[in-house]
Amino acid sequence: MAAQSVVRAKEDRRLWGKPAAQTVDLPFLALVLLLLTLGLVMLYSASYAQSEYDTGYTISTRYLQKQAVCAAIGLVAMFFFSRIPAMLWYRLAWPLYAVSIILLLSVLVIGEEVNGAKRWINLAGLQFQPSEIAKFTMILLFARLTRGFGTKARQFRYGVLGFGLALMGILVPLALEKHLSAIMLMGMVAVVMMFVAGTSPKWLLAGAGGAAVFLVVYVSLMGYAGDRITAWLHPELDPGDTGYQILQSLYAIGSGGLFGLGYGKSRQKYLYLPFQYNDYIFAVICEELGFVGALGIIALFAMLILRGYWIALRARSRFSTVLAAGLTTLIAVQTVLNLCVVTNLLPSTGIALPFFSYGGTALAVNLGEMGIVLSISRERNEIKRD
Image 1 (cartoon, helix red, strand yellow):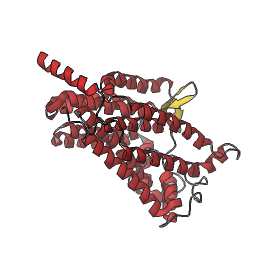
Image 2: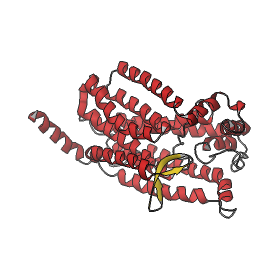
Image 3: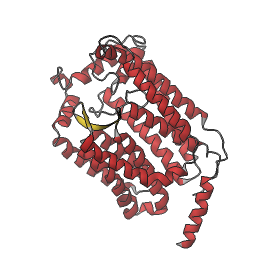
Image 4: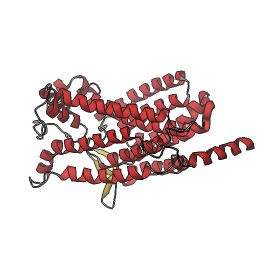
């Protein structure tokens, strides 16, 4: 054990050193900045009607201004995180995990209720969702555990119980908040990371079965979630209430046709489609840019995700590989779930489209996470250490 500790200490010192590649991965950086720019442009188009309505027709950029401020904060975080060694996050994994659990539990006491859900904390006028931070800390802790477990991740004790207990520390507070969308998202990301770590597929399949049972029971106990399922299967049965949003979304997508109505010319955003600047912004994209424009944005997301996995495969340590893969998977799962909801392939989950949907906490955190991936990309010319 002492010899192993000495070897690990020497390895840590090597990993803390400055990577040989001094520049970040430029294609990944360009894709992030392009998606952010397009997101802000489309957010203005999707939100200005709602902004004017909310401000008595005096301000059309209310939501864009708030999002731009958070984008600036996120870009600063991305720049800063891209220049610090990935191993710093290894040291901070457990402390940040503990902080995220405290924040999640504090929501139950001091959280603000918005649209019927109590998931936000307001500090000095700044409103944020602790669940966004929890997503990152879960990925960070899983990456640390993967490096610590090593080949033992194939064993039930480590690959299932070890990861499972860490995951439950986050999911239990989310369940108390009734934050089903975050539970689904983090569960899916956790499965991918456990697979990368080496957990046996048979245990992952068993876990997926258990999660399906939990989901059925959870939905049956939550009336509003059950209504979402009914609206998903038969939105036409209640077009004025539970099925209204998805029908308006489909109207927007269908009216866009092949090339769209043109930028700024969406009709559904004029208070017909609820949350047109948030969860359902992709419907406005389809209406204004058409099938071709929407396909182009999907292609940009696909390139970003593939490039993120490319960076992960070329990282110089197991920790960096799993961390980059987890952060990339988070973007991938969020994107796929949002697109499926907007097109009615899945029931409404409340999951936003990265870089496009309105939400300051999510945008700033996403950009900061991309900064970590960029930091890991500096290692791409290094030989793997473990």
